[in-house]
Structures are given as structure tokens and as C-alpha cells.
Length: 366
Image: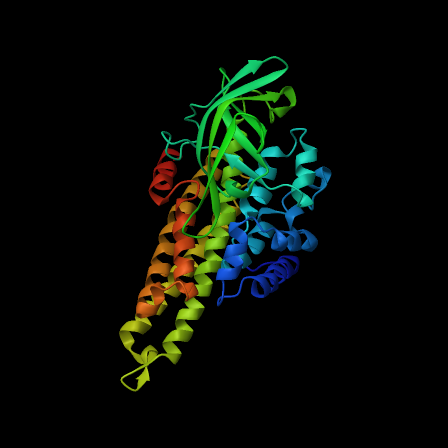
């Protein structure tokens, strides 16, 4: 099977690859990360100009109607340069949740960059299970009242709108909640990979009737399918990160000298870099497999995505840790981007369920 990108997908990859190289250099990242910490959106506005925020939005909703493989090309470039923008959360997961539900205005806000959207789907007591929801949505005069709490809202620290799952009495519903809604408390924090996440507390947040996204009480299948698309975006990001680590580690082995020779001449280290390259290629194959199953029947999709998430997470941690080890003491310093890649791969492994969670999900889907 041909796993190469099409010409159009290669152009997408090259576009973001150049953007990443220009805006997120391997050296001197601290000023850029400081800007991100205070919510600077200059680089996000550049992505708007490139048009890629509309990639995963259907054409009939004003987007480009790109495929999951198109998103994969973009996210591989994101991973190569550790671009810490909320692309998967706002431009992959959110459109998959919103498409076809009558929330065209929010989709337009995503594509033109005027709003960043984050999904609040998991809770402290539920682990990574999307169907274990304690947050309640009760009918109120002309709308809904939401009460509960959400944890680890990926990229929620800079979000303007949240998509919140809640129990409606007859199933799980999904609700559009503005970040400034009365009764909503947003607790922001930076994770080790410098993404800005959040926790939410909803104390009787009152919403209009139009806040519901899709069918009342019937949102779980939509949520599960959308999260699988987000997972595949992260798998491609992990592949890009691993490729970057293999390349920079191989270059380091060729240039770092010990005992008068390049350390890459030591057979033991040659074995390690080969193992890293094999793991990165295995991760690429699993990411493709998962992505190409996104439009299959739900059981097939869940099994393929769970297998990809579990194995790519394992490969990513292996490659990241080997890269740090082969760089020696400098590998753990903040000045070298190797440690940043490992931190991001650790967070990708945790996003939407770690490897252990998806091994169980794979078994349950059999």
C-alpha cells in the first residue's frame, strides 16, 4: 500500500513546515513561549492567513472539506516543530462536534480565527471515559442550566468557547458555553509541554435553548467519533516529533566526539538509533492505519484508533527517552529542544486516554 502523501498533502505539509521553522525555532524558544503564556495570538493569526484553520470544516459549512489524511499532513509538521497552538482542539475536534448541528456561526468563528474552541468532555472521577458524566444539564426557562465540573480541558486556557458534555436525564448532551458565561469558572494552567489547559466549574450556568449541540441526550456517538479524529491528529503530531528526534539524534551522534572519534561509531549507540528509527516508522504505520479507519463503522473505527493510540504512545515515549539518553546530560536541559519533544510526547500519550486506557478499549472493541 502507498503511504506517501498526495501532491496536495505534501504542499500542506511543506506550508506548515516552513511556518514552523520561521516561527518556532529549536533555539531561543523562551520568548515565543512567554508570548503564548499571556495569550498572544499573532502566530494564530498567521495560520488564519494560511487558510489551514478551515481545513477540517465541511465545505457546505464554509470550510475546505479536507480529509483526515490532509489533517495528518498538517499535524506531522506541527509535531516536527513543536508548534504549541491549539489546532487539534479548535480546528479538528470542535468542527467534528459542531458540523451539521446548526452552529455555523461558531464554525465560521473557528475558520476566521475570531474564536478558539475547546471541548470539556472528561471529569475527575471518570478517568478517560466519555460516558461517565456527573455534570448535569437541567431544563430552565427558555434554555438550560448546567452544574458540575470538568477537568483537563485540552487547550482550554485560551478558549473563547467551550463545548461541554452533560447528563440531560435521558442521555448525554453537548452544550456551547461562552468562556464569559455567568457561573462559569475557568482555572487555567500551563502543562509541561507549554500548552494552556483548563479546568471548569459550572455553578448553575444558564444558557439559551440554542446552546444545545445536536440531539438532546444523543451526543455520545458524535463525541466518541470526534475524539477519535482528534486522537488521529495527535498521532500524526507524535510521528512528526519522533522524526525530528531521530534526525537530530543521528546528527548529534555524527558530530559529538569521545575518545577522539564520533560517538556514532560505537556499535551500541548505532543499535539504539536504529531502534529509534524503527519505532518511529512503526508509529507512522499505526497512525496511517488509525486515520484510514476513521470513516469505517464505529466498532472498526474504535478498534483501529485504540490500537494506534496505544502503540504510538509507547513508541513516542521510547523514542523520546532514547533521544534524551543519547544526548547525555545536555538532553534534559531546557536549552536543547530534545527535552521539549519528550515532554510533548508524554502529553500526547495522555491526551484522550493513555496507552493503558486504549489497550483496554481495544480489547473491549473486539
